[in-house]
Length: 154
Image (cartoon, rainbow, N blue to C red; front, side):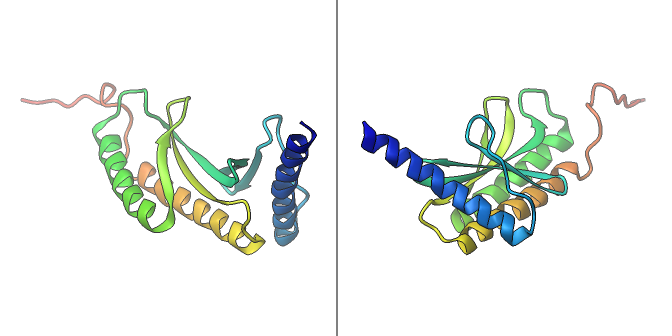
């Protein structure tokens, strides 16, 4: 039992080392874990949740897009564009689009926890880049729900 506790402690140390290295690279205050052991890093309007799971660091970004609600035509079209881009990025950059328990679209990436700080930062940069790229597609040409918009047909 003691060996398992030491192993868990070593894993926690690894993510703390990476996050302290990231804070020194960014010249910011130290990042603080929440009660679930996750770190939240924000760049402008982009939030990235970072945590460790199964010997990997996981990067997650949730979009302000509720998949449980009805989608307008523009939202459906934008979602199709994002899913197509997500398939391409899954092959090249190992990022995955999924839906979380709150019915939000989420971009996820993972990297082994044995990586060095530069690889960790590179994956974080990719996460922010793709999140911002997908957010631009979501915000493009969207109008409010079609039930609110009436069109007169003769």
